[in-house]
Amino acid sequence: MLLHGCKPGFEEALARELAGMGHLATKRGRGWLLSTGAPAAETALVEDIGADLCFATFTAAAPAWLEASSVNALTGALRDWFAAAFRTVRVGDAGWPAVFLAAPEIEGLGGRVRVFRDAWLAGMAPRMGRVFRLVRTEDVAPMTPGTGLLAYFTEFNQLHTATRFRGWGQRRMRDDPQAPSRSYLKIEEAFLIMGREPGQGETVTDLGAAPGGWSYAAAQRGAQVTAVDNGPLKAGAANHPLIEHLKTDAFKHRPEGEHGCDWLLCDMIEDPRRVLGEILLPWLDHGWCRRFVVNFKVGHGDPVALVERLRDPRHGLAARCATLRLRQLHHDREEITAMGERRLGPPF
Image 1 (cartoon, rainbow, N blue to C red):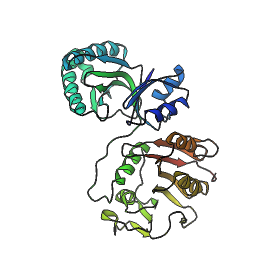
Image 2: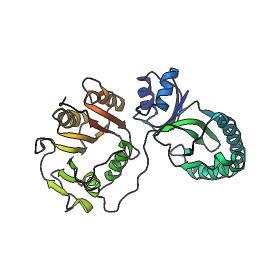
Image 3: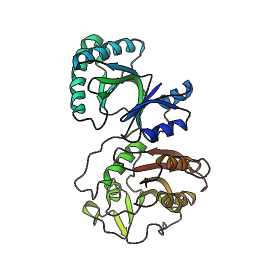
């Protein structure tokens, strides 16, 4: 059995994504669902660093369900459960994460969970001695699969808990007052999930750049940016010394030079089929970029069908990419963000 978190309203999309991987959704609530699959497949989703889920925010193995009538009673129940479950766990010097999460859109639940977390930590410290001194409290489940405590509150006195879990990288990012738009938060989140970002001296092409949030993020890291858009750049992107603004059609733009650019960025309000077919696939096939972050607007379309299209081993991105991550970011709305690196060798 696996527990998955997701954005409220996308439970069905996550269930369908999991079904395509051989996992059956058995129960769901607002912002979460349970699934079952073959033991090897369940282990892979939690343990395999290369595993990928678009719509999940975290995945936990063998979750337990706890319910009590008060904070004190629930705190005691989680202490007892965790002490028993952790007896067979080996902890290294790097420590272990303790993650306390609240299901989204339940008023007051986040504050209740923080009170619960502090009470639980205070009560567990004398019970576990040296091992407890290695605890790390974290706001989101870490992307590296590991052992610790995850407590996911679905109501004020109800939670799922597990000791083996991993996050899929989504998190709230800190805004920059000089960033031209909210979309800046999406690219910052994408770089975090990729584990890579544009660096000093690298070249970036940002298609559909205006008002310049993604160009600004790359230029702040020292990259040389070509921002392509007929619209104006604003705030920190306007007149930035590392940003060249080309006022032209992003769909018609082609890179100069034999080797293209290091990064392709694209966040446009366009039909995702057009962005894929007229921008991302040609840029990969011709070797015009090494890495990319491209945002697709789902709108009234089918988000699962789009993910399947992007993952298609023959006609999508999988055959073209050495690494590929598809995510519905924390800062995405009705969107999916694709991040990856082109496969080395001749263009596709």
